[in-house]
Length: 350
Image (tube, rainbow, N blue to C red; front, side):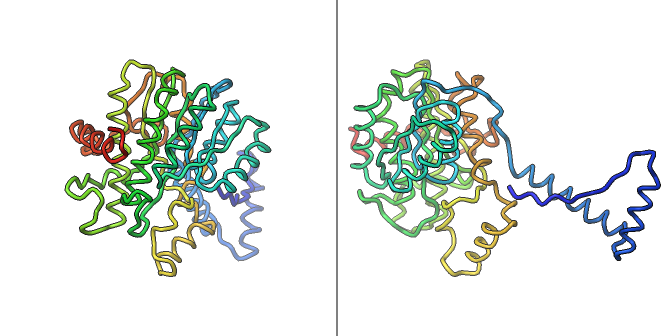
């Protein structure tokens, strides 16, 4: 967050002469008290707006000593800040990432910042089901427990790309990859109860529907619709998995991190377009205050991962560290079961 404080000289209630002196100084340099008042009021309103946009904050002081956490896409953005926070709480944190060099750099940074050396990296490319299986096999072989799984990685509004297995990229990475990873790690997670699974979704789910007749969008690709569908799938997956894990000691919740200034938005606009330049201007200047920063964007994920009061809370959708009502499409239990059955077949779990 960028802070540019305005120093305001105020006098004690009984020191009216100081107030007069300040007014005299302002008038002497050509700034009227009215103009200064307008600036201060505007600055206060902007500060209040910034506080509102920053959203909720996780205030829990819970420790995670002895716990193991796996975070997909933990090398950058909100994933990295989530990893940093949980490492600071004493957890063993594993970053599951496609780019191992960036992941190792993130681990080095987090280790230096938190003093926690119990960090690890594992290769994971969610656009490859083979890579997902290799990652899960390694975790199951080398880890004795998995207390918290955070399905954080994602891709947003990319061109019409396909995964290694031929799936529409956003549906394949944001949903199918995490669906398979979670299923393959589920026995380890169940053996570590009480355990938690957090799926990072988005408010974009509220403007989407499942395109059941053309789930891969081969008949007419729209990158925004595809992104929204993949985020709706995250919430439906959360709902159905929570139902299946009821009374087992594993909770599952979905989160909306907010509008965050991260690398995720790199495909939103065409490179070089006016809209793209405007987004870049906002992201890389003090105008970034209209977005959450990665630390703020990570708060709801952290809240769902560590807050003791949520030990038995499952199947919900959170935003700004509080449960929120998702869209009507996201509350459709029949759709959740249909997506589950379809996903099982698509990733080859039958």
